[in-house]
Amino acid sequence: MFQIINRSAEILKVDIDNEGSTEIAGRSRGTPRIANRILRRTRDYAQVKANGLITKKWLRNHLNHWVLITMDWTIWTDKF
Image 1 (cartoon, rainbow, N blue to C red):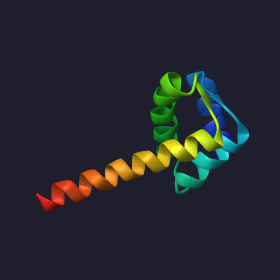
Image 2: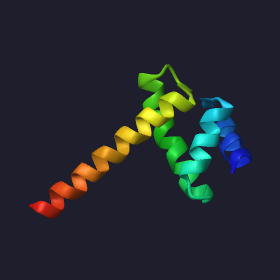
Image 3: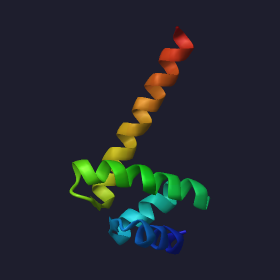
Image 4: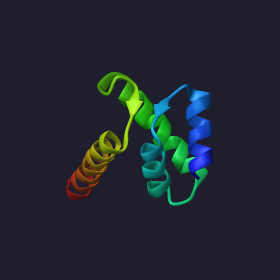
């Protein structure tokens, strides 16, 4: 997974450190499609908020925030 993420980052011209690649690999459940989706999503956000560099610390904060928003949306739509 680590190699797939680094190769995709190279193709997409994304700056990502090794710990960031490891974090994406851990959250992708071993599925390259999910890893690439996470990489593309974080790339877009990192270009605006993190000067284009994806690090483990930034990635954890971003993905945890993203999961909370998704959970809130699910609860909101289920409730109403």
